[in-house]
Length: 425
View 1 (cartoon, rainbow, N blue to C red):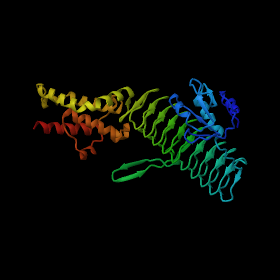
View 2: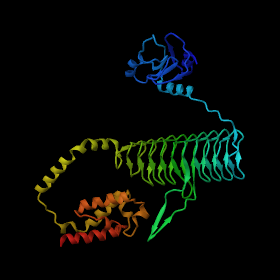
View 3: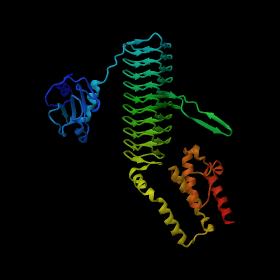
View 4: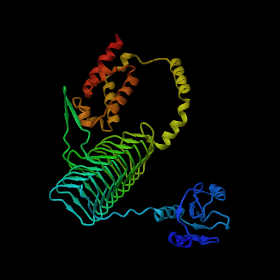
């Protein structure tokens, strides 16, 4: 394709002499005379003179020697994407079903769809127009694949799950596996059956080896145009909004609702039963344990507002000295409180208030007999954080073997009363 034609296609300005025939796009160090190179930043322009490239694509704000032909554009990033699309290899798949494909009963497969070797389809599978199913995919009974969607090799879509239009499922994706759900009652561990399904909206992309679990009841849902990287886990009964980015190795706990336009950066995790507001951003390697407001930006473990997290990171190296200073101040202060004074009637309310703050509920809704895990979805991290605060507040230590018996507020109050009495003796 001639350089002038490429300039017209990109909506840029062709500058310099020599309307070359361009055959590809390459990195500066690897380019040849028939290649075009994209220069993203001003600092890389100097190195362009050492490249063997035939032409360049640059921001029109930059200045390049006119002895080398180039295309200048006001939207360099968009132009670069369009240039990549221009030279992207076109995979044309002939419609039809390979002879080795196993097709169940009552399936409806559009004549324009392509199903390659070794695929297995259950009963009542629906595959719409121009969908492409690569080799060795499994589609369970009742599955629907929308028009124009592409399933790469070794994708598994379990029974009754649905893939919208123009979706892309990369190799190894598992859509609709049974979620991780158990309940312990005494010495017996019960597996919770998952009778729901998993549904993808239109234009969703799932990266290689990503998993989306089916719901217990209802559906796990991923909204339109959401893009999911490799090795991401989406738990049962989650609802992911539209146009989100879930980056590699991030994970979303079961029954969490993620709004639209949310970004979960690499290796970030979101606990179960939370609500993440529209447009929120979670920085990489962060652990979100509380719901987030729309537009909130958080980072760290546990995730905190990013300004606070940055301030904590700045002060962290000073922590040992600060601790020593506090210890010296405490030693110099006259201790006016006694253990007996701590055990006045208000300590019970203080414990209730501390628990309510950790559970993010009002203190008056916590009955002393309520099981914290069953009634408030209190995970082990929440309980551990609360007990750590108790240890600090009452200057006691709670051994791990005692933690297992603290299932209700009543258990905690009774245990604490006993420990404080022991301290007085």
